[in-house]
Image (cartoon, rainbow, N blue to C red; front, side, top):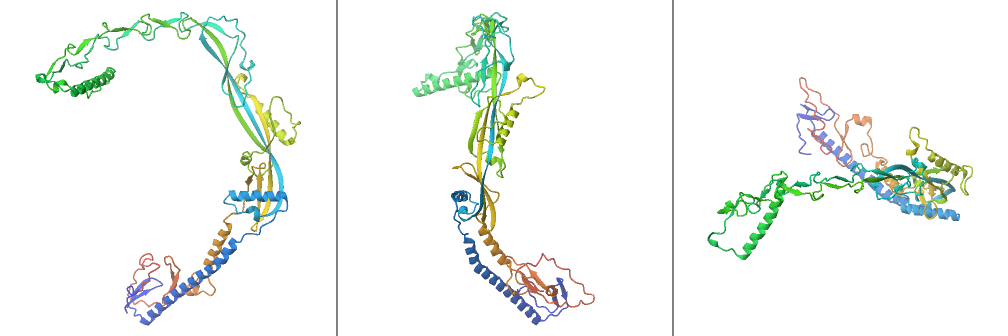
Length: 537
């Protein structure tokens, strides 16, 4: 601070207006007094913080003991309550958000049981289409065909199962012998390989009767033997033979590609003239040799020159047997409805097992006034409404023969019991729903005791103690506020990084401006001053 302070009789800094005035002769005694006041306020603030931390530490132990103190356990008064408490403990152990041992410490206020019903209807929809199939005539006599009926007028075999695959059923006594239109009832058609000519263009010479020499690769010359008749070693001759064989096969493959119009260079086919003297090729004339076809044509391999082939549709008989098949496709649709009042969402209830009370295939009309045994009237009435609504097929503007029809329906009625538990825990009231049959119980609750609730209250209590000022705290201490009179006297609080706000008192004395003297501009609050820097000039 000594570096920042400059004792000058002709220099003064105004803390209220942040202005500098010349011509003021300060007193060293007043400055020492200001320094002592600052020290006193800093020490007083540190003492206040120390007292507050000590008070929090002293009370934290008591709060922790209170937070760890569990409620009093409650004993069950009946066998049903004992079962409910065991289930609540199981729920709290499975769910980490619920308070531990909830069934032991909760105070049960009331227990009541109720039930809801789940009505499930599975409907198998069937769609029928008729297809005409042609097959070659086998020589079997065919009688007079019967009249053709609509697809839904035929009595077909029953299909077992809700999830049935696609089936085809051939209709008897509807076969017809017709002429094959593909061969015009002759049994023969032009050969597709040679287009009825009996021959094809030679694939080797492309009709030129000559082809490229394989020895010289069409150059007309080959490399001469080694000068002086020098004989090569055995392994070198074997290597040269292998290289010529590989190069020949690779060149043949590239030649096939070139014949299709793709110019592909052959890196293995090098010019023998670049390696030494050459001689004319003994196997060809100017790089070409005669083709084995002789005339540029080859006999067709399919018809063998007959120009005709058997018709594939009628197998050469010239006749077809036309029959009809009914194609049946199936689609399974499932509907579920919860009957009864319950706070538990329906998506949770549909995943439960429950007790299956009624299950049957719908083979005859059902009546709402005749419910089965152990099934309530409202549940049965709802099931009959679902079945009748699913069987309706009133779709105007669509041919009834092309519409899908329900051919199999299975209805199931499942009873789902549940228990409503009203209990008291930690000065609050809660409600727990336990549903599904015994052995597979499930739980639902809108609100429940949180496992970390007491720890949360502990931290809240400690935070409140930190924010509460100590009795008799000095003005300007942490957590206190200065009065308007003190602020008028020049108390200014600067924020310190990571600490308390320590008030700094400045002198209220303002020297008078001399005549003709100009005030310097007010410095920016964001420049030259921070929470840990106090400068006097």
